[in-house]
Image (cartoon, rainbow, N blue to C red; front, side, top):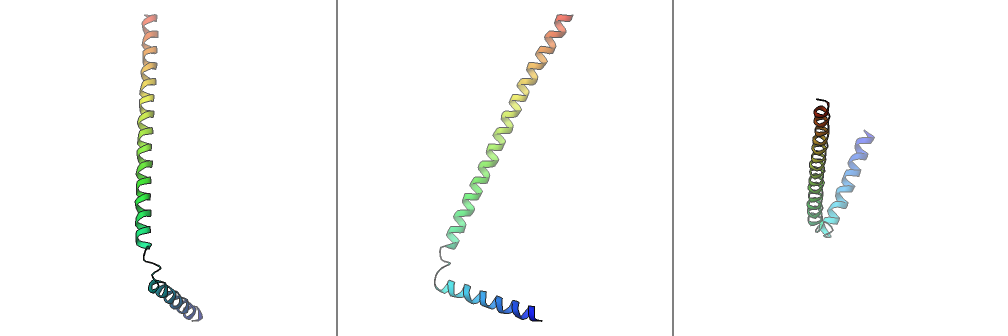
Length: 82
């Protein structure tokens, strides 16, 4: 029971402090700050995805190039032994 009462007292105190800060206007710019932060995070995540896609496409192109070179060498070896 003591824990419930202590939790209620802490909750009331936190609510009172939050209400006082709200009345003083301390939370006025918070929405704009959070919105800017969310936009920046979204943009950064999109950039990471784009860079990753570019890297995968580059590696795919390199792998296809190396495979075609290896096939050419195999074909040359087969033709030379025929």
